[in-house]
Image (cartoon, rainbow, N blue to C red):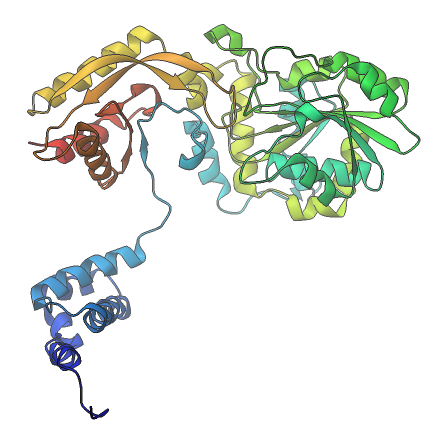
Length: 475
């Protein structure tokens, strides 16, 4: 065969390529031309060129039909809008998972959002207004943390893993840190406590067993090289049954008897007694300090209900050492996070956390309130011809907090019957469609139904939620 001759398929593809609309013809189409009043021409042109190039690649790879000018114009217009759309978008969380890691963990209070807006311009981040000279960003949020937790001093860094690395590097580098084997946890994303400790330069000394560790195990492990005794709260799993572990009081007493530092990583950032709401006791930062811990570490974006950060509270002499360590600059938080953290902590100081902080408002929501809300939603959806029911269910705290703990709730269960598809397939397709709403709705699919949990839907989101679900589920 003559190598210069094209195969019939290749010849057809080349012919199809000639039928692709030109850039100018697509730009002149009303669907695209109208965008040029709203978007810079170079962005619109970029979108058109990218769309045409994708068509060319598809024809060369798979052959097929050349889209019409109208189709190309519509797709190019959508592509142009997608180019300028932010990738980080608000969504409505109807899953019933309160601290949802994939959805940004804790939603912020109105006051925290307002504080972010105010801090977005110039601020006194590193300026002493009284002295009229350079100040320190590490003074912000300290006073409110002292008042809320009773600590001597405090420092906030960019997350709780960073807080742990900083503490170990500044206070235990080249020396030993003693930790129970039952607390060698993986904190998410593949990051494990032993690896974090190795990165910090501290040497891990494991004591006890997975399920049972005694104070005497720590005592026998203490050497002249020991710097720290640590506790890491298992906030994302639970060991039950035949278990034993020393209390913070016991570990703090042992540490101080040997002139060592006791560090308690409480994890979730609870400042409120979780047993009030029928949940297991989650250690609070205040109780850990009162028990004798020298430093207490916790997350800002879990049960604290604030922005992502890691908070370290405790003895002023130790916090001062942390602030002077070179890693502190690399791990510091910005003005936006500081503003949101202060505003969140102020809710606790004013005794309004359950009312103002979304995480705690969700946790404290009563069954009757949730039942009424679910019933109202179901009534509105039925009025639009959508088959649904109100059912009892369970919400989850989530986000590496209170593992296995659930709260009673009421759900709206939507069922669709598509010919040739199972209930599970129909519910899955509906879940996909509600995710494509103007404001994406994220829901659960269980037992062949799409489930909407009102516990995690924020104030002001109901109308958008119902509009999106109704549009996706309309007969």
